[in-house]
Image (cartoon, helix red, strand yellow):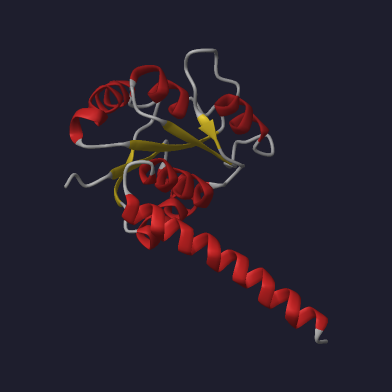
Length: 164
């Protein structure tokens, strides 16, 4: 049986505190992943090599996080045939994160990037697992259990609130 794998890339190690949230959720679902730094602006050759070959290297979904101008997810999507999930990261040189959000969100027709909320790497991990679950029932069942646990948490919080 093929092992589904997600690749998590980021433009800088300063993005790691956000992007590790995607890795943490993938671990909960039992999805294999790799993680690397690939800068669209500082290592364009590495970006091209990575995006051109990810599908040949056993990757099924790419999660790409970037701050500032945030070209990494879009450039990967322009090259790779794989689904790309973009995570806009609020960086030190950011305009309250809006530059990152719009850079990733406003892709031209034909080059889609599924974009999550600012610093939303956890949701990117969930979405990647959901994409994989289209062909992996084991992962699908874990997602169903996870969503049921979210529901149960709300029910318990509601009951606690009413009992006060």
